[in-house]
Amino acid sequence: MAKHRHLKNAPLTEALIDIRVSLPSVFDPKDFLSLSNDISDKYIKSGPRQMFTAAFGVEAGIPFTKATESKGVHGYICKSGDGKDVVQFRIDGFTFSRLNPYSAWETVLSEAKRLWELYSIKCSPELITRIAVRYINKLDLPLPIKDFADYLTAPPLVPDSLPQEVSQFLTRVVIHDADITANIVQAMKSSLKADHLGVILDIDVFKVNENGFEESSIWPEFEKLRALKNRIFFKSITEKTAGLYE
Image (tube, rainbow, N blue to C red; front, side, top):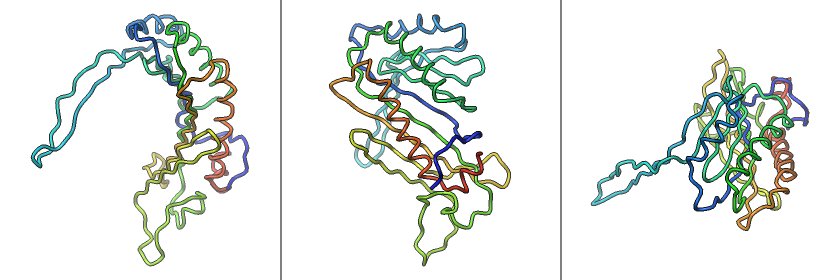
């Protein structure tokens, strides 16, 4: 595993702060349009998010798909002029995303707070039921790779008696730390860099409370989620991998 430290060229492709809510039944999703107008000084690209439903099944041994049905506007998505900051205002919650290049946690959290306050005032959520921090990393590992264990502490394992050449892999584990849950996904992906192989390390850390969080408590809780996310990241990679992003 790697030592926990700041990586100047962190392999992050997207950082998300997500808050799931229950809104009053009388709330009209079209009111999100005024929210997008309120932030149009920075978030100049916006548009509605549509909700669709579809059904799949088997009837008399024959698979079928029912036509997709639109359920109308689900929310609005707004993007900054450079496309790096993205906010979603939805009937089931709020998400703020920062795309590569990543700045700093404090900057991301501050902007998420600012936008959440606008959402909260507009929508008056009845309950906050889930909070999450998700960081999607893409590791570009130089080829050839003789052993994934050189880069990952939990690499894909192939029995010794089988051919060892791996062209794809996908692993997912769910771990728990008291009342916090984390989904950890590793997957092979092509790389845009010549003579490199891409590996996605997707870390989704969240906490659920069906009875609802106090709004004032969620920001200290986000710090706990972030701390576990960092532990997972550095314990998932080796020093050799960390050295690629110093």
